[in-house]
Length: 210
Image (cartoon, rainbow, N blue to C red; front, side):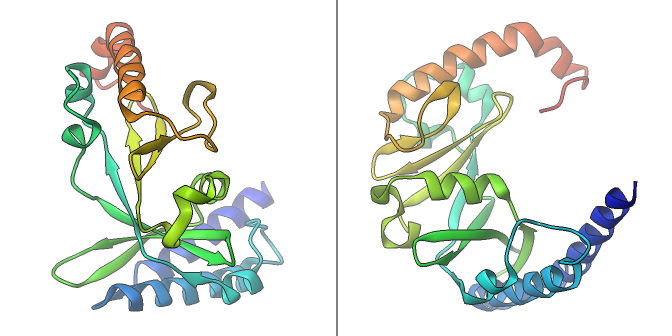
């Protein structure tokens, strides 16, 4: 019970700090978010372990934000080979890796709120951290500048795309091996149709969530 209270307190502190991490420039927002994260880790370190060393965050640098997009599930059900990009949403946020050498220490997510004005919306996403570190060097080159993160709703999976290849752990695939995006889309479509047949009615009734 005490650990749960400490965890909630830590998250509340995160929220209160990061809700104010809003700047007129992307890089300023990243630096503000990084500074606030260090403060959170320092204040909560004795009571709750986020699994992140404040010193490592301090020594890290924020690289270019990775576009985050979502796949349109209805369009996936009707997919007919038009290419993955054709059924993706516009960029919803940017996932910013904080890197120390070649290691991703953690990530920040920022979103644009008005012209040239950015706000930190998420911190300490362990999935992004772990999976970005697992990607092969060819997907991480140039500080992730060629990479896009794609979330597939209902199938509840993440795909990383770079230079015409896709990387995912979906259905036991390896993040270290690039795949043909079109073959992956066909796999997604089969599973999406199956999901729709099983759970479509529950979705309509609002009784199913990821």
